[in-house]
Every structure is written in C-alpha cells, then in structure tokens.
Amino acid sequence: MEPQTPRPSLNALRAFEATARLRSMSSAADELSVTHGAVSRHIRSLEDMLGVVLLQRGPHSTDPTPDGVRLADDLSKAFSLIQASLEQFKAGPLTLSCSASIMMYWLLPRIATFKERWPDVKLQFDMNYDQVDFVRDKIGVAIRNSAIEPPKEVELRELMVEQVGPVCSPGYMMSRQLRGVHDLPNAHLMVSKTRVGAWSDWMAAYGYSGEPLTAHDSFEHFYLLIQAAVCGLGVAVVPRMLVLGDLQSGKLVAPLGFVPGPRRTVLWIAPHLRNRQDLRALTAWLEEELITTESSVSPSVRGPKAQ
Image (cartoon, rainbow, N blue to C red):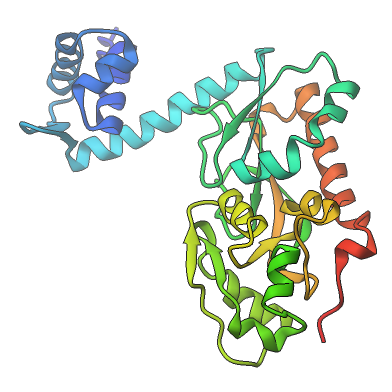
C-alpha cells in the first residue's frame, strides 16, 4: 500500500489565500479572526510542504511570488465555488446592488410596491455602480449600465436603452433664454465625474453639429449633479430615469427632450442564487418596473424629438 501524499490543512490554505489577496498577514489575521503568528505559521508550513516560496516578505507589504499568484488565484476560485454552493441553501437577506443615484431617484420611490407584493422578502442594499464579487459581497442582483464589463459568471439581462438629455431648472432656462440647441454654447454646462463624456455622448446621439460643447463644472455623482441643476447652477446631461420625479414636479425641465444614448440598462444576476424564489421575484419586478419606466413616460416629460 503506497503512502498517502500529505495534504495541506484548510486553515493553511485559507491563511495563504487571504494574505495573498490582502497583501498583508495582519489584515489576513483580522479577516480570519486569528493571530498574526498563526497566519505566519500556517503559510510557513504550507511552503515547507510544497517546497516553494509563496510570499515575498517585506517590511511594509507581503506580495505573492509567481508560484504564489497562481496558487492564490486557484484557491480564490475554489473558495468562491464552495461559498456559492452553500449560499444557495441559505435563506438570508437578498442584496440588491445599484448606484446611490438610482437608489435615490428611481428605486426608493418604487420599492414600496415590491414590499407590498412580497412582504416576506428580506431585502438589503449595496451602494455600488462598478464591479462586484457576487459571492464575497453576497449580491443577488445588480442594476448596471452596459458600459460596465460584467463578471464572467453573471447571468446578464439587457432591458431598456438609456434615454439621455440636457436638463436645467425653469428659472435657469428663462434667464439664459434656452430656446433651442443653438443656445447651449452660451449655457453653463455640467457633468458627473462618473460619466465625464456625457456631453460628447449626447452630441453624437442627438446629431448635434454646432459649436463643440465642453463641461464647465463636474460633480462626484449624478445625485449631486442633478441637485446642482435643480438649484439653477447650469445645464446637465442625465439619464431620464433619474429625473422623472423632478420633471413631473416642475423642478427641472428638458428643453431639448431626450434621445436614445449609447448605453442600455442591464441586470446582473448571481448564477448561484437564481433558483431562489425571492431572487426570481425581485428580478421579475425590476424588469417590469424598468421597462414600465420608459413606456409610461408622459408626453410632457418626453420633450420634443431631436431635429
């Protein structure tokens, strides 16, 4: 009977993966709720068993060697797969990820209808508009735009084309006498730092051929940009779904209407949770609401068509 090949302990593998990912034994120890010394001993025993150096230990950082990078990548995938397999059996809260602007201007005004229809679903939120790790961050579904690269394993559902257009306060429109597209070069143009090319995108979508438009001010997020427009600070190009309420209340006007932009609103769905009933209910509701957002816009909010 041949002797069995020694196998590393799961604790040693976890200690190394966390250290390689966080580039710090101390941070790995905090994440795993063990001591720095325990992490160091686990990794040293793993290196001794494998006969390779896995980490380059420096005074301020701990970086994996090429062998360490390969092992850490494989371990991360393996631990994610284990976690994903377990998550589908848990009945914990369902997490929806979206940007703070979508949360403030689109989701919160509508979420009560979901809660009325599905009162037993425990829903929590993750404020993010970029990449997420569905397993690590425990995300069930994410609202994104198609310009953001989705994770490889995600189930993707494309919904509506994003409608974009310039908006401003009624007072600003009157004071600057914004009667048509030719008046825009004389306006104070604003943009969000999360979409610095918004005016270029709009010019291409609208078919604008006048004097090039360049933003004079930028704001960290769309919700700050929209508030600046409401306060009469200038003209902002925004997705229509974020300003429906302000357009309907009269806080904002869209003097040139809205046109289909280069992006689509999409849903990213966690594949390991797609069989959960609460996730299916939330996904179906989001699809219904997002599509209804576009189809039910009143003529006064749609604005004139581009010429």
